[in-house]
Length: 134
Image (cartoon, rainbow, N blue to C red; front, top):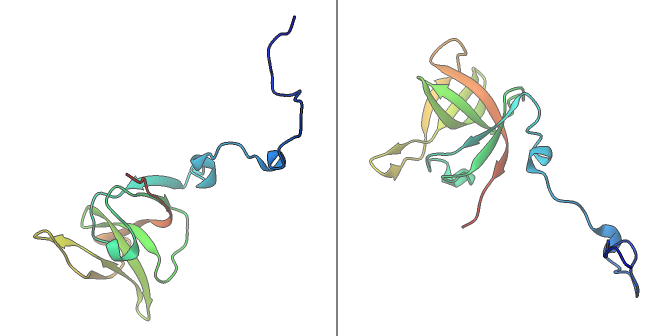
């Protein structure tokens, strides 16, 4: 008697799309989260809506990536972790961090030149974003 259907032996015509079937998508692999310098960070505020970053988004942050003008970074500013925009100037790197105040999103709050040993430390560069839909 038969042992059951395994899917290897079929009758009829094979699907023309059968050779382009791919396996499941592994987000950890796609986003390279196995690299020791990559971390997922969930966004708590809504301060960077104009850059497409929303509350609940997951940012992929690389602590080994280099800065580029206009990139998003996660920085420790006076002990508080914030998502900021890095801008190159003649004097060095500046961060522009949007802030929420009295339930109103302000345009930006420039915090000046980044001094690694001072009140500002760049923790990593945002290299990706994952968003869940309702």
